[in-house]
Length: 67
Length: 536
Ligand SMILES: Cc1cc2nc3c(=O)[nH]c(=O)nc-3n(C[C@H](O)[C@H](O)[C@H](O)COP(=O)(O)OP(=O)(O)OC[C@H]3O[C@@H](n4cnc5c(N)ncnc54)[C@H](O)[C@@H]3O)c2cc1C
Image (cartoon, rainbow over all chains, first blue to last red; front, side, top):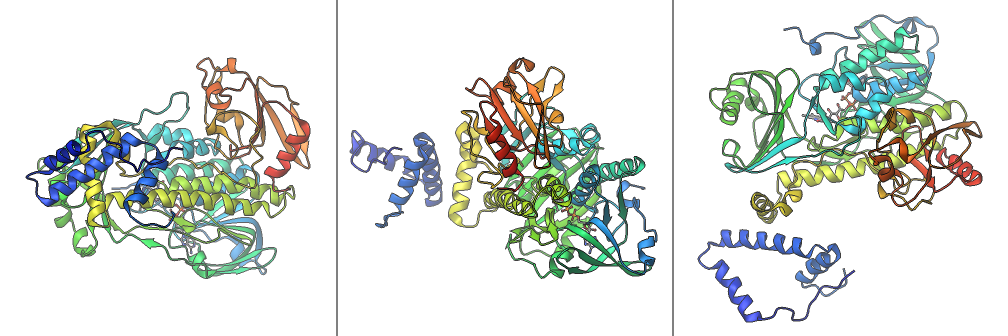
């Protein structure tokens, strides 16, 4: 079982962030939301590891308690 | 039009039981002659148990109901002597298409695993399904088996006693009482038996209506399952098209919650909807139109002393995934051999509690799957719709998203993991044949594996030695000796040995694995037989 990486892990973080914003540029909110939903699914599939995915879902909730 | 569903197949006839001064006692009574009650009764009669089936009707199923029957129930029907006519009449299918909005997003082929006698699925109208079961009942009667169906015999009251059950029955000529050692309640989703015993349940009702139409048409649509999410002809809703025998097509149209059912059912409203779906110039004739709402729920306990519930009476799911009748047949498959042993005094009554445990496990699995399909088809929030649509959009371009599309996860038999009848797994063998699993079929040089397992306890040895017959406290177990060489395709090896070089399996009468090891060990297998029959 691997652990979710929660320390900096993207080389060229600023470039990535800019690319993320560019991808959304000019989109209506609904289309942006749909794009984000597709992105989540694509990334989740790439990760694959169910336990890492569960950890990521919990981390995204920003709750402090375990589980 | 004189169709099978309009013909009384077991018309009412006055029975001498109605004139008896004291109620006549029967070994077993089955309430309800639907698919599940008929399967239960055939199984009982084949085991030599005297059985009476009571039904408030005298015909096969009315309206559009089950069409899709899966491999495991077909294998069970083989054991009941009526699998072949169903497969011969049914439409075998493997292909499908998924549409989203105005476009096809992908096609699929279920690519069923090779080396099974029965196909993954057939489509067959429920009325044919029941007709074949009734024919089998008549065949058994002709052979002298103690089985009868009493039409227009409606159970109107039930009394439970420590060693029997009494039933009051209403007929066109008045009512009478009978008794039974055991009653199997297969009286459907609305189960009066459940209500009469005060065991009614609540569950999750899906706030949605489905228009289910069976249409007869001469169309050149292929034999595929077509499923639409949010199509132009049924905006915001779903639709399904699937082929049945005799040029009949099943159409499901989701309608939403706030509708006027009576209005929607009228042909002048149904026909334009269907034309929008099928094309203006397709000629068709309506066979049935019904509107259903669906529920996912189960009884807390399936056994209430000597009344045992099976099929829709015990549990209900939405039809996406074809789990209703399919799982009901697995109920009776699980129950009847146990009941037979208890009736013969060869197993303690507590063996029947394992029916409760194992089939509740099965019902939970079906309810979970069916709830998930329903949530995908009818997203419950804006975000779940957004994620659902994202899955569908991605599925058009990338293979990874297709397994996430859920328009019904088609019925598979469940593995009784954790059942009290299982012995610990003692073989380094494949997952799919661990204790609790339904035995997968395999092609042998002289026929298929499952028919050889039959409906008795079997000791399956693969390249291993064992006695030809073991008797343990009244339970006879006969050996079926095989070698990996008996199956040149190596499916037997792959399904039952994996990395092991030999194996001995104890297989229950319902063809589920009770125990397995690499070689025979008398003490351990005797213990496994006791365990599988509720004796330890
Ligand atoms: C639209 C639709 C599609 C479906 N598709 C599928 C599918 O593709 N595959 C699948 O496996 N399942 C499907 N199902 C589910 C399937 O139809 C049911 O699960 C199945 O009929 C249950 O069988 P049963 O014998 O338990 O109950 P039923 O078929 O309901 O039979 C109950 C019987 O009990 C009798 N009865 C009731 N009360 C009394 C009484 N008081 N006394 C005597 N008799 C009584 C009734 O007359 C009836 O004959 C579908 C259902 C619907 C509605």
